[in-house]
Picture 1 (cartoon, rainbow, N blue to C red):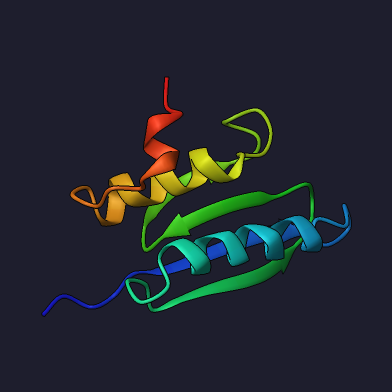
Picture 2: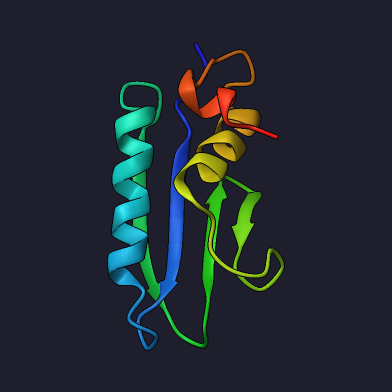
Length: 95
C-alpha cells in the first residue's frame, strides 16, 4: 500500500496570504478527504506562495503568475497524485 500524499502550502505571512492558503487547504481537504495524509500550512516571507506534494511543485505564484482557482488546483493535485480519479463537475468545466 502506497503512503498517502502530504500537501504543503507555503504562504507569505508578510503579504497576509494565510486566509487564502487556509481556504485552499480546506478545498483540498474537502475534495481529497480520505485520499491524502495531510495539508500543512507553512508561513514564509518574500511573496512566496507555493503548493507542493512531496518534491513535486504543483503551484508557484511567481512561475504561474498569480494564484490558482480551486478547480485548477484540484486538477493539478489530482493529475500528480490520483490521475485515475474523476473530479466530477470540476472536470466538466475544463477547457
